[in-house]
Image (cartoon, rainbow, N blue to C red; front, side, top):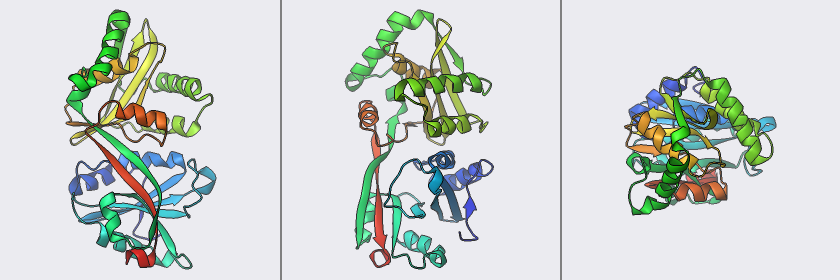
Length: 308
């Protein structure tokens, strides 16, 4: 890789977040999120300049979780630039940085491309389209006010009425990691039929980042852990990385989600519940909470003549 590139690690993701804050404080992808992508079989590299952050993704073939035969050994993430700025010249510069590594390569893959970026490309094809992030107004998830949230409020009230008096909460403080991981492991197996190790390791590394900006809530019913949620506060966004609750208690998730935001005094304007992992059921669920907006992006294949 280019000598200017820095491999994103546990030791430097906070520095990258500082750079993001200077360019686009409420950008939908956090540096912590990018760092944790390593559990999908990806290495993240970045180059910081005063007005842009170039992001490169290197695929570790033997560790890749999301198979896509279209993609070569690495691809370029949409550069992080100021809001509403045109991305085209930055894509060109991102390519220039890796030209020495492109001998014999006729096409590149650009990911997390916005629809507004596509008009600058000529010879390209769309490989996939996905919802990369679901953004909500925080106050709409606290108690679920309003007519549009009636169904969620009904679930919240059902849990409160039937289980609330025997429910207790404990704030996440970094000392409960083993208990959380045991719960997460069982939850994944129960819902997926097997242990998705990449998901488990993603959460494990999140917990052991020991980041002071993490906050969350553990929910117990009669001393049994039945739900846990953990989020990351950054600028105007509270980004939820972990949200799991038992299906055996109707309304448990709504009760957990709302109480976490209220009890932890989450004052960020927005809640980012990340992507839907291209799972139809998860997509429908996240849309049912009436997001303020959805970040929709493309993975595109483009030849050099198509971008320059």
